[in-house]
Length: 65
Image (cartoon, rainbow, N blue to C red; front, top):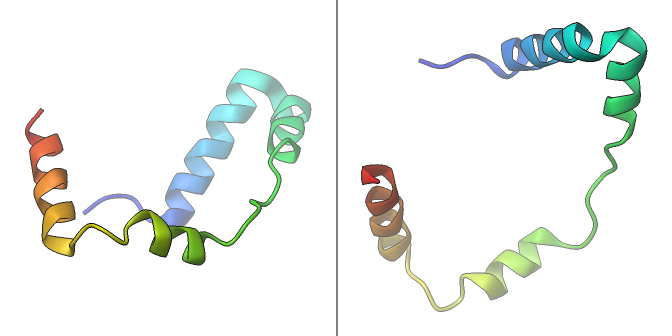
């Protein structure tokens, strides 16, 4: 199984600190802002004409590439 979210977060922070230092890593994190809009509503509109089976088929096709 893969890494936990906590492990990914810790490794990511360590990588940022290694490359940018503590100050740079902190500034990098502060660049992020929360998203805007209503993804639930947008997702319903985006996927209204596609079935779950079609999505699964597309995912499997992309994994083979």
